[in-house]
Length: 260
Length: 260
Image (cartoon, rainbow over all chains, first blue to last red; front, top):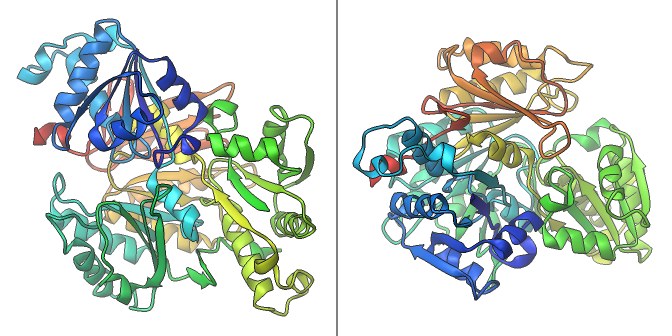
């Protein structure tokens, strides 16, 4: 049995009961080091297989191999495994193996779809857990965009920012910046500001270390967001034209109040 | 204490531990009848206050009033309270009351922000739980759009569909149809087909009764989705140009395989 489990922000209370059960019952827990360390604090006696970022394919192939050998393996993902997580990659690897696709990496795992039972357990992705900290910035239609250009050309990211601005979506930005790309959030703000659809006083928000020690949040304007010191532990929200700052809350109204 | 709790699909195993704890400890559970009935199956001895759809403001004001009177109240929302749920409305009502906004509905709840402690507990929204059933349709950038025009003009919905198509987002559609608006999914498919960005063979999916008895899923093309019999218990996915059908999975690759 191979399980992809979204662990939410990382603390026990933010995990679903089915994820906690899967972790308690499995033989082995696999993941990116940041997430396996969070889980190890809860289940210290399990076997762990952790690799750093960029080792995603190798890590998932290892998990598939263990599951094929009859072990009960859980691949843990921060937030939800289906949002910038490992669920897609594992499906790809299983499917290519079962189709006999002739690549060096996949060849050795032939026929996996038949021999491995895959189960995907969703979790609370950062868009949702961060929104709950700020109030309700995503309570109407929204778009989720990662600013990481490790796997996506920056032109594609820009195109999506422009489209989201044109559609007047509330926007949630993942991976707004990191050491290797400190300017990405500023560049994204500039794309929005130059889109012709978003003004500098648009209500925005940022949450850092969601649900973890040292959680910080701030509501601000898009002009201020441009200079906000975001890092890879920050999730960013850009409001739609309807988004309000209501005291300490950032809210995108759905319209219930007008309707009743 | 007033808690907004997202209950996910509705079964115990899909709720987070903090939501289960809040439900176990509270005095009173408030919500739309469909959701309170799901929770009542787990906590039959609690006090419940349930009202039908369109009574959202009245229901939230009742919950605020109970909390103000010193009771521990949980407002339950299907999925996540921050995604088309009650978190925004409750923030609006609390903020307007604390600002002394002079409306008939709010006046009687003056000064609430000080007297009511608000806590928002996120949950697994249908976009994520349905995606986990299909594979990983939202594993790269995505947009979430509701097709309900009860609170949103249809022109705004169309504009967002067109923008999402232009940005090549994977799209998750909530409220694709209901008895009162059986044609909305077909109309939305036509907007996408006429956008110039999405072909009729685009990979799409639909999941009905996610995580509940009678769960059904189907992967199909956009042309087929146009005639799919969706209802208010269905969540719909339209892939991006990169989305693949891999055997029984619908996957929007993030690009890990190419990178390693």
